[in-house]
Length: 132
Image (tube, rainbow, N blue to C red; front, side, top):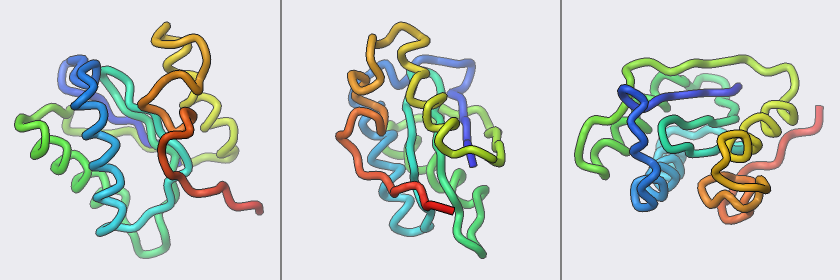
């Protein structure tokens, strides 16, 4: 599934490198306590995209609640819109291309691997896409 969540009033909180890094570190902390398979992500200045799969019995709502709570706690203020958008995917690879190309489209970098707050950078651990 593709999850998109926005900052409140699209404030560019994650233009600050410390906040962007915390957004990623919170994602991994939440994953330890509320397991999910993370295939890719991008932390944009005012929103985040995650491509993930929730194991049977898991809850995307619980994952996102824990994630948003963790980021707010670490940054020290409320930053999120209350909702998030979920799209069930037919093509995970296409969703990853969309997510990874987002910083290029917004002129934050020229190549997808240049943007540090993306799984395309090669700096972060992600799950392999399962072969069906």
